Amino acid sequence: MASAVTGSTRLAAVIGDPVRHSRSPAMFNAAFEACDLDWVYTAFEVPEGRAVAATDAMRALGIAGLSVTMPHKAAVIDGLDELTDGARALGAVNCITNAEGHLTGHNTDGAGFVASLRRAGVEPAGLSAVVLGAGGAARAVIHALGEAGAEGVAVANRSADRAELAAALATTGRPLPMGDLPEALGTAGLLVNATSLGMREGDAPVVDPRHLHPDLVVSDLVYQPLETPLLAAAEAAGCRTVDGLGMLLHQAAIAFELITGLPAPFEAMASAAGFGA
Ligand code: NAP
Image (cartoon, rainbow, N blue to C red; front, top):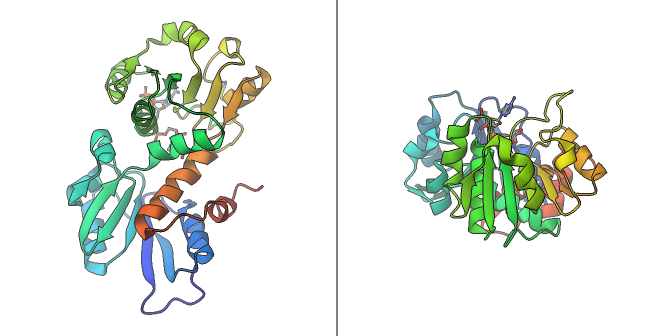
């Protein structure tokens, strides 16, 4: 954060409900400080149904950028002037930029996921992937894996109808019946848990550990806890693992770049995220 807020300090924020737990203010304010920018970032608790009121306020107040979280990622679209192709395909926005009142909606989740894979030394192009889940995070990951050239993206989800819709977001996507998961894992190069399983204490690994093998990279989007039962089982099976923190940091770093037009100070954002060393 700028050492003193003045009349020329620029404002960015996250909108959501709940939002007080968000790590975005810590990450963005650390980034502004690292870049010596006279900017400040805060959190606005905006109740469901008020997303368009928030975008109207963004124009009226000249707020430079907004991050968008639950429950506004779809509803906020009605208040925007333009969407990127990715945000339009997903029907969900997690970042809004403001060019003199012209608001553009972006979705940085999928690109953040792919960047986190690459940072861990995993190139998704040509990989055969299995994605578990079909909610907002899964949809962003499936779309991004398709864009990044994954050879195949098989989508398994508790609710099969949602798996079919989500799989259509990748050109190489296909729905995968839950019963076919063991066979698909046998030939896959990447497994992504994009369900919320693993967040609660006592959750079992989301797949049977016997189906994990050392040629499989295993990624879990859950970041609380960072070491999920799936990642623990994957490590025991000799798999390379990628935890959910990388996606969280990279989607924020990409949003920082969109909002400020500057390269993100990634290390400063990472140490401010509050996950320890
Ligand atoms: P969401 O839209 O609510 O989707 C939840 C998904 O989990 C759905 O596919 C749902 O299946 C599945 N699911 C939930 N409970 C289940 C159960 N008991 N058994 C089987 N499947 C179950 O949530 P989301 O926003 O996509 O988030 C999913 C996870 O990703 C969360 O843990 C979130 O914290 C994490 N996430 C991480 C990042 C990051 O930056 N690392 C970003 C976004 C989200 P149905 O369709 O059958 O209901």
